[in-house]
Length: 355
Image (cartoon, rainbow, N blue to C red; front, side, top):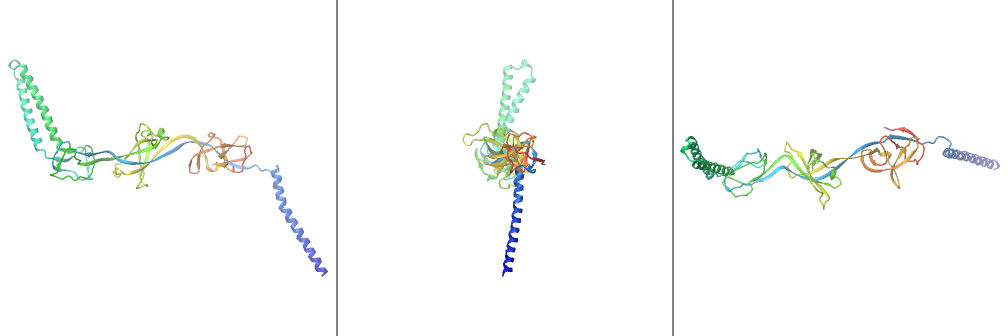
């Protein structure tokens, strides 16, 4: 029993010695770390620095607007009459001056023939008087003949205009709308015939906020896409600007135009429009350079003596991993892009240049 007790006592001693060694091993590193923090060893943090760049901020204004044809009218007639021919179909493309509808114009045609005959008679009288000796005809008679010719000319022009009004022509090249008119229908003055749209260019009207209005200029590039087909992009330009800010909505009316040579775009469609604005220049830094605390965002500027100082920053916009900021930084100055999380103002650092 005595031997057994001695053995147990020896085992306990060995365990105590082992525990003491382990405790010493764990304490020594902590003491070494504390000694380094007190100044022993090189604890200068290594950071990645990058040069500050300044770039122009490109802001984009987005809006929604409705498209219309460059020219669009509803055709009517200035005279009443019975339709003798309808020479177009809905959806067909027509050229400027193409005849669309003819009205019964027999009376007007007879009036033109009568006016032509009267004009010819008056002209013959003038020609005869010119061939006679001046002493054989009085000035009064000659003047009366000249006046009669002028009256006949005016009557002929009026008769031809009346005849021309009996034919409705396309005022410009475009696409005809639908019509219900048929041969034999009576067409009263002012009755609609059909619409015609010049779809070679689509006009889009939209509004921009008051803050962006001064930056919108004529001929500025714009992009548009159909709300129904957002994947298709159409390029155009600003055609016209409003002259004042709407006092209720605080917006400016803008008119843009998009070429439509294939006539694929239909007037009345809704478009999503965006205009790229050229803003002021601002410092650009990597996103990792931005630090945060209770006071807000900031960056570490690296001074010539390899110390860092805090520079407050306000984020303006982001472009991928780049950040436009409002800060008192100049192009060419260095900021800490990596390793700035545990720095303090005035601290010395070792720098390595970033890309």
